[in-house]
Length: 342
Length: 285
Image (tube, rainbow over all chains, first blue to last red; front, side, top):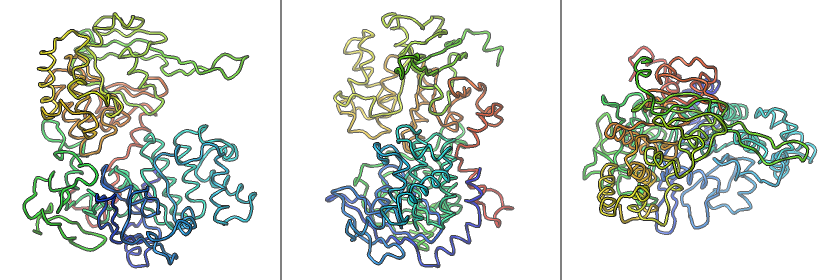
């Protein structure tokens, strides 16, 4: 499949450049609260131009909130602290006003959501919706130009007969086609950062494969940085160069996909990889599991967030494990897989 | 295997099953458009078999589940359950099927009544089967234990549980009437990976313990491969391939099955392509 050729192409070189050059997107010390509940704590990462980074986590890990906060789209009642900076924008985004954010969203940074039906306007033809984002940001001089560009974009996300597709309403399209329209809108203004939040979770596997190819092509053509949020380890390995593992609203491990997935250090990631391995269970055919369930929002233990489900937890784990290793490649665990620490 | 299968009558025999839905009319002159959800399917399920059904949306797998559990009626064809025809039967005469075949659905929130306590949810299928209250209470306690939920769960409501725990409640409810067949319709698709492994293990354990016949419906071939010995691949209302799971997974013959296996994301394949040159000679970690 096409996706893989992109993903494997000189990932090491790209990752190194991304780390050295000025980052396109830099998130530091991001915290998100709802009243007294801490939902996300001290999340930090950066993306270089053209870099593809994945955030993986299960429900309640804070991965979607992290993405929303980055775009200034947190729901009412949630407050964010820390800083989010975008190259070429002087204003720090978390403290930016709605007006400033509106100039950035859909232009310098854009997002594809999981549910294409709720993200598209049901009363508007899809071609007009693609054109709208260009007119809003004045990247096309007039309506005619924007309409032509919209048809062109719909063609590039391989909608057959883009002229006819542009005249369709969202309900006339399938889930996969709607998601392509979303991608066309997100890429319309050549953003420097594209954020995808579970963009293929609602799609069939064959459609998912095509969609992943289109995302990779789209960011490669524009040298956009990609932040790809998913719960699916296989998808992240196919799409991204680096991965950030979230659990309980904290980064528990981060690094290049190959290193992190073949040599996990944090016990949560070790357990997650084992539990997702359907091919090598125990001798009696049972799968390896992590005991218990993911706690509810804000119910994670103090200290190491994973310690109430961890077989290696000791008293040491009641205090927060410090980050070990480089900012882009490390982990936060007192008793890591493979030894050392504590 | 064909010999063994031929020797015993199958538990479920499906022959030339079709289901056609009518859409609402779009024109006065033309007849209402039809949707052919099932276009003639035939297969057998042996007692004790772990039978997987895989397909994408629109393949007809949900229609098939509805017909097998007599929640919808076939347009034509036959389904024999333990020798008895169920197509065309009245709801009243389907009571035997309701006892012998139970379903666990995908959405663990939508399939549990939010206003009922867990003990009433689990006991509900037994009501129509004439168990008295003491027997029901006893059985609920047994079932909670079987699905590894604490006894204290019985007095609580569904919203007080996580997705995985709710799916345990659904499984306990399904097993309350001691069915022969358990139908799992995308039962783990909505669960987190760490919880999915727990529920798959639980299903495997219960299938062994109660010698259930398992019909496992999923869009995910790798999950089916782990759970089932036989798989039926569906596409556009047809059965495109049927056989031992391992064989079909390793050497799919039908072009659609080939596309499906190639498109399914695999961590192993993805990592193989990311393998740094330095570790290519070294043994796989």
